[in-house]
Amino acid sequence: RPPAHCPPDVEQLGNATWTFLHSTAAYYPNRPTPNHRANMLLLIRAIPTLYPCSHCADDFGQDVKVNPPDVSSRAGLSKWLCERHNEVNLKLGKKPFDCTLEKLDERWKNGPRDGSCD
Ligand code: FAD
Image 1 (cartoon, rainbow, N blue to C red):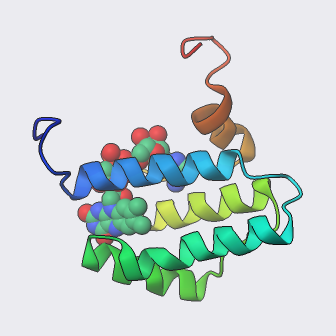
Image 2 (image 1 turned 90 degrees about the vertical axis):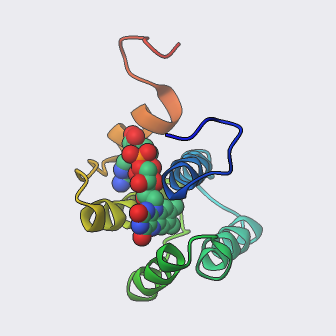
């Protein structure tokens, strides 16, 4: 793993990007305004054009074409994003994440019940 002052490799970039995207989904409104929905769609649809790992960007773009974003609610968006991340996990031979809202909120919003992240 390269030192922190080095430019990010594909792993670091991916980890930081998933952290941003899952955190943003975890705090997305339960009842988003048209403005929230439009901006979330712009954010997701920008990735295939702008993400600075071209094969990652291409594969994500293909996946999003087949599985259109659900920006209708926090729960819907969180699940949709979890499933997209699981597609990448599958491709890389990583374990799938349990995409229930309970597990997603524990990981990205509330932390575990044992208080170990408080
Ligand atoms: P990450 O996969 O980065 O996950 C970070 C944390 O998220 C995990 O520790 C876990 O707690 C949690 N998590 C795991 N799965 C889920 C899930 N489904 N839902 C919610 N939380 C979850 N790398 C490549 O080598 N090739 C690619 O084609 C590629 N495509 C990518 C496309 C996109 C859009 C992005 C954002 C990243 C891509 N990556 C790709 C990077 C790859 O997904 C990982 O980020 C990278 O391998 C580092 O993995 P990690 O072990 O740090 O965990």
